Image (tube, helix red, strand yellow):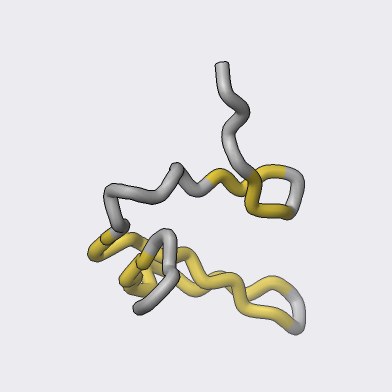
Length: 53
């Protein structure tokens, strides 16, 4: 996977009916990430960078 900051391999733990939708609860089976990229932060519906302290 070229350019990926994070790769998650997941399994379905549970499926929950929600009206005309189904919510899938996932469990992480394997996680891999390159060590040279900054952390992945998801906040306010967007991927963001951490500010320098």
